[in-house]
Length: 297
Image (cartoon, rainbow, N blue to C red; front, side, top):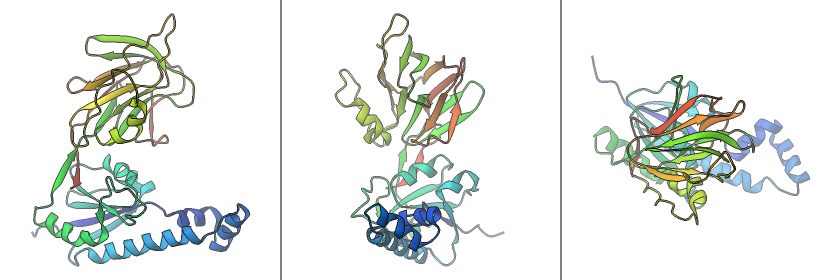
């Protein structure tokens, strides 16, 4: 039996134009809506054309003897990835994070369709480089970065993975109530929630929380194996404290016990709709995930 051919899996998210058409039905109706808001369709159409051209070039760069598939961001949880897959995430940097938690060692190439508009922290490769990257992957020469992922595991066995950070707290703007355990220390807290961030996530939400905070540990580098936890706006009271508010996780994981009767959640990478319920008495253990994301360097 011959070797199974590699498969290129193109991962996309809707362009602004595609999202408008889902909402309004036709381009004319979308244009009418924007006009009523003092806007035009011109810029949105221009961006769509740039991305559509990039997708076409990308498809043409895949070798003829490779298998191929395409999946949208909202379908990732239902898509069956295969061991031979090479993932081509085309679009914003966040799309790499969206796909990361569904993979088990498949390499990811972040493709930037619009370098003048997209920062390219994770989606760093121009479309023109894809053919060479796929050839390198097939030859086993694709340079890869190990990007540490973070895992939250509930006491009932449910688990959640994330590339940037995991949030533990209340799903609304109410205070989250819990007991936090780290090393030999334990504290009952009421706060706006806890972030546990990777080196990849240290340039985003975690950075804004850590900015200007006295005594905060240095945030991990993008390829670091360490994690950092940051408690948001802990509120001291006669029964709650605000001393154990940050730390670097390099060994034993962080443990949090919920004291919320309703609304406690854990979610990853800012995707609030994909969450674990975190009700009273449940324990979540957050630490480094067993395997990293393999990102094309």
